[in-house]
Amino acid sequence: MTATLVKSGRESSPPNAGQSDRRRAGRGRTIAVIFVLPALLVLGALVVYPVVFSVVRSFFDASGNNFVGTGNYTEMFQDPATLRAIRNTVIWIVVAPVLLTGLGLILAVLVEKVRWATAFKLLLFMPMAVSFLAAGIIFRLAYDEDPHKGVLNAAVVSVHDAFASTSPYPTARPRDDRELARDKDGSYRTNQAVHPGRTVALPLVGILPGSLPAKAESAYRAAGHRAPPGELRGVAYLDFVPGGGGTQNKVDRNEKGLPGMKVQAVRDGNAVATTTTGPDGSFAFTHLTPGAYTLALPASNFSQPYAGVSWLGPTLVTPAIIGAYLWIWTGFAMVLIGAGLSTLPRDALEAARMDGANEWQVFRRITVPLLAPVLTVVFVTLVINVMKVFDLVYIIAPGPVQEDATVLATQMWLVSFGGGNDQGLGSALGVLLLLLVVPAMVFNVRRFRRSQR
Image (cartoon, rainbow, N blue to C red):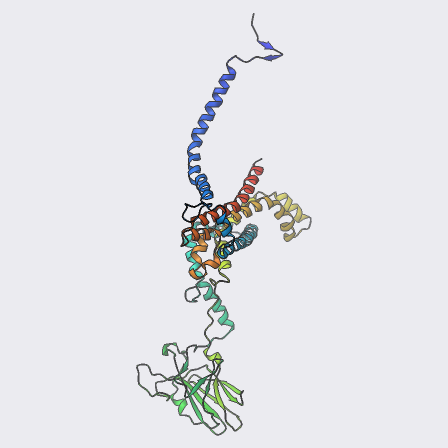
């Protein structure tokens, strides 16, 4: 007879089945620990130990020998440089992730309508391949205040000069004060009164002969023309002969006029006539009433050329560095948002269009709400990245404005190793930075877990 082991309507397991399962489970856990152990050791050495050491070190003074309790934390919030770093970090957190997420969303939507979408994405994503060090050097040069070096100021100066004329003689000045005297506003006037019927010479120096306008001609003949009665003539010229020679305060044959210079006839403190010199530097005032006049060269003749914008000055240095950060990370935001955009249900978008919604309504009421989880992940990831920004700030900001652009990461390095040599205070700054980053990291991890479910 076949024996069956039945108890309470269920088959009974062999006596050693439970022990066998427990042994297998124990073996599996042992193997898992063996595989995870190297990663845990590396994580402990590179993450856990530095964090614990920094927390402990933050309670000691600069030497590391004397326990100061929360003294470093108190000093941290009383130091103007640290408060400035916190303010700049807040500006970064508020501005950079918002702009990047918005730009990434707009570009991701627009790229779908571009024929060469792949090439366009590659072009925008390419800055991600550039290191922060290289990007910092690139933008340090791009932001250079000299228009001959900085591409941005070169563009700004070109646009400005297209709409506003600039003086070709910013360095011009009289040879001495006997002929022309300088006024407070930067203009020059003749010391002696002149009358119609005369020809007046206005000698100037301080101009390189090679920098004269191409249309400049010899001033010798213009200086020899006598003015008819009732007309006041003159010549503005460069009182310098290349190679030497010539007579000072006298127009020589090889001396050239200064074309395009504005000249005014002044009487009783008011400019009654204005003219501009010709290619040979000559000018003439006709129909002047008899009397004494003073010739004036307005300050606009000697104004310095427009030099552009001080991108790396105390006011604009932080926005300028944020601009460099946008250049690097816009492609990252666009690609991530574009990946989320490709998974959207197209039937919902088409149904909205068939119901009469325009593209803006589809974008605002359907695309953006459906992309909200992706946008949140991108935004939080960028917030975490922004809090740790160091390279761009340290490289782009010049030394004199380093404190105006400093953020928590750079301030931590400057206090600890960049001359402060106070690793206690630097550790306190590191702990503060960690406390700011942890909530965003926890939020991101929770979102990833929810999305996996």
